[in-house]
Image (cartoon, rainbow over all chains, first blue to last red; front, side, top):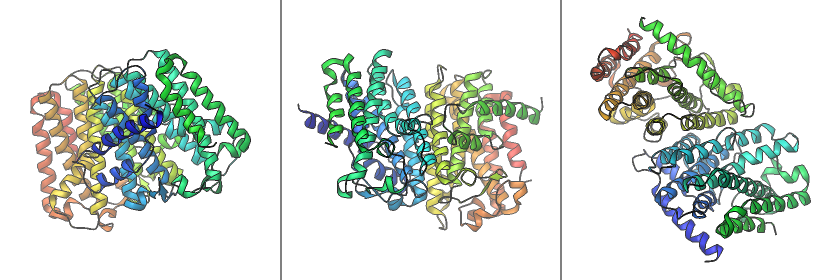
Length: 288
Length: 288
């Protein structure tokens, strides 16, 4: 199977699981707002990374799929809160009105809270023998030293000129942390040893850093139809981006270097890592 | 030891644990905002309930204390988000400026997210043999069929006149769910069987319903200095309250009935439940 077909098959499996993932006994319109945020079309990259990381070592069953939906819930909640008027004030996301535009600000705040909580509930409901350490890894990367911490640095330093180390820490938290969560959790569920889990974390870091730099570059050059969100907004809002810190040429070079680093980290997995390698290459192709 | 002395000793233990609970490697000002929300003076009722429920069966160690801090993190995050301008728009909480007044709205949203995530991280970092089922219970009560669901009903029906069943479901979610979480998690950690856990859930329900009705009654009659928050606001904002649905006299009677129901549920624990009984009685004394 080629990469696109394999990705499409995995994505279809994830979409079906996401459609079942929000329990029916949640009161409306909260449930609707949570589903709206979770089911808005997307690449489903984080759930796919979790499943495909697991499959490097052994086939992924229903339990692994539920962890994959938890990853997307965490991603979706972070987008809902990130788009709020007090945060990035975005009205368009993945080509659709953002959650607070569709459901109001109060319900969007609660839908985000509900999705973050449901992610943990989903993982804690698992009967998988390694559910506990896998949930621990995801929770740590998603939290205040990981994704939430990255968002906080983003807010704190918008409109300022911090050194590169701050931007690097911000982008590692904002983007790489959830990739690392997905890959390491997939590997932990599959029974990987510490060395393999560390290799997975290194891949997630490289992919995440490359991915964010590529996003920054696309924000400079694309239109709304292609991005599915408002372009040029980061720069206009005084957001920290890698190209603004190092220039566009160096940023392109850095995206390539981080992609290489991600691919190099996959060596211990041999040919089983081809899908993850191609994922990193495809991301880089977006700026070619 | 009398009730007040025992409560003060337990509260002091919780305060010390809360002061250590937010890790130092979280970037500022996020860490400061999380600590501000978590350490604002409060009754620490939920952590105390968790510890004292555990102590009905066996002494509570360091692991149990960490679950107690997780309970307070969930409570604190819900207050931070609840106070936001898009939600209840409260500027005063426990006698101090609310988190978004002190740290700005964006950082308050992230501090809430950070605290909810940290609660789960804290539980997932536990090496206690029953950490997984205890965390599962807390996560379920805190989520979209529990506390978050109650908040959503509150938002949805503000200014409307729903039937009593809706108000009951709303108040059960908003207030009773976290009491049930604390008591059942304490019992699960202590190794209680299903029957005892169910008795604890029934106590939490009764205490929570009584507590919310008492809060509603106090909001009608108290001043800011006594409440530590803006009084009369619920009624002015068209919030659903129990007295507004059934009248003040019936609400007083219902608070008494729910308190009795809570106390009755403790029968299987015998004299070991005296602290939990007194907790319910003390709550009721606030409106006497």
